[in-house]
Image (tube, rainbow, N blue to C red):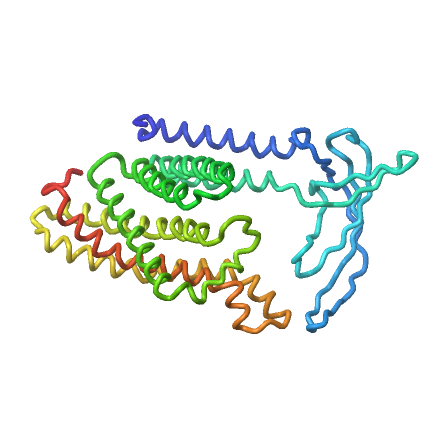
Length: 371
C-alpha cells in the first residue's frame, strides 16, 4: 500500500490500469466464443421507409424497418451469413436501432434445406460496460491516486458482499431478508470506512454516527407506520416482487438511508478533525457548534441530491403512465409513492446525523489531532 503513495508506484499503477483496461476492451470485442447464444456481427445495414403510427391516446411515434446483414461469430453456425430484419421506433421504448459494427444476440431458425433465418434479441453490451469501468478506475487513479484506489477497492468489495447477500436471500426464500441486509449494512459501513479512512478514531466515530443515524431513522419510520397503519403504502407498486414486499422495502430503505447518512457523517467528521488539527485550542462545545454549522450547509444539497435521483428514476415510467391516460393520483401511487417515503426516511437520517456527528466528534475526538 505504501508503494502506491510514491510517484513511481502511482505511475506504475496507472500504466498497469491502462494496459489491463485496453486488453479487456479488446478482449470483449472478440469474446463471442464465451457465449452460448449466437452472436451476429453486423456488416451492412439497409434502412427502409418510415411510417407514422398513433395509438388510442393520440401518442404519435415513427417506426422504421431496417435489414441487417452479417455473420455468426460463435456456435455451430459460426461463419455463416445471415439477414435479419429489425423494426425500431423513434422513441426507442421497446426496441433500438442497430448500426454497422454492432454485435447482436440472435435466435437462429434452421429451416429445411439448411436455410437459416434469425431474429434479433438484444445488443451485446459488454464492451461499453468494460470501457466505462476502465474509465472510472483510470480517472480515480489519475486524480485521486491512492485514495481513489481505496475507494474503488471498497466499491468492489461491497459489490461482492452484495452479490453474496442476494444469493443467501434466495437460498432462504426471502424469509430473512431484513436480517440479511441489516447485517450487510453494518458490514458495508465498517468495510467502506475502514478502507477509506483507515483503522483510527475518526473511522470509529464516523461508523457510530452512520449506524446510529440510520437506525434512528428506520425506527422513526416504523413508529409512524405503526400509528398510521401504513395507509398510503402501495406495496403492490413494487413490480416483479416474488417475496413479502414489506421486509424487502425496509431492506431497500435501510441501504439507501445508510449511503446518505454515511456521506454526510464522513463530510462533517472529516471537517471537524481537520478543524481541530488546525485549531487544537477549540473546546468541545465549539467543535459541536462547528459541526452543526457544517451539517446545516451539507444537509440541504444532500437532500436535494436524493430527491433528484428519485425523480430521475421515476420520471420515464411516470410520463408513460400519464401519456396513456392515467390520472396524476394513480401515476403517483404506482410510481412515486414508495420512493417519496424512502426519500423522507433518508431525509430524517440526514437531519439526525448532524447533531449526532457533532456530539460524538466533540466528545470522543482527541485533544490533539495528529496530521
